[in-house]
Length: 180
Image 1 (tube, rainbow, N blue to C red):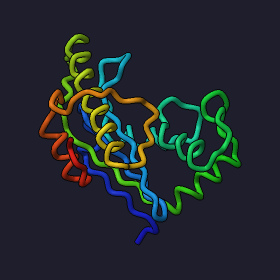
Image 2: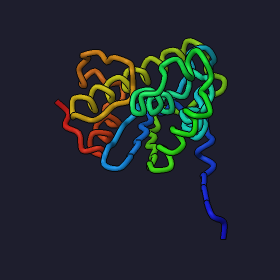
Image 3: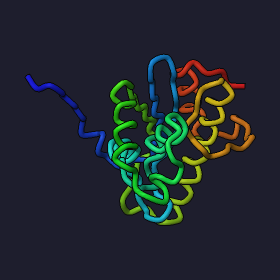
Image 4: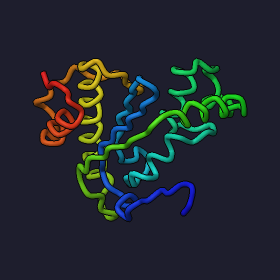
């Protein structure tokens, strides 16, 4: 038998509009990152596996928010690394050691299918809705005292204005959050 086994279903590679939550657990601390799929510049919505892997890139990137949070906010390593300059080997080693002692779980909620022939206008409208639920879930986690890795501030929008109310209720149930 192999030493490690990573099993992915084909659905992990399907483009969709998704809300996702990455749960990083390290010792007794838990951190959450909330994201959504739907590109701002190109008409596409990345598959869940590609989005997860991008979050853990150890090179200069705008996609690796989780890796950067670990490096800068948890380990307090130099702020410009990974943003203005590449991560040093020393930083990569420290983040690797942190991750080796951690558990990562990604939860993805299907919002809408991605149709390759979708118009730019339809894509933009769907993206606005996915951004809306993303902000509401970030707000919900923060209001329930969870450590949220997202740097984005959230609006004081009402949960009643959620474009996907059943998904919001499911997230609240899954993470034992109180909707107020």
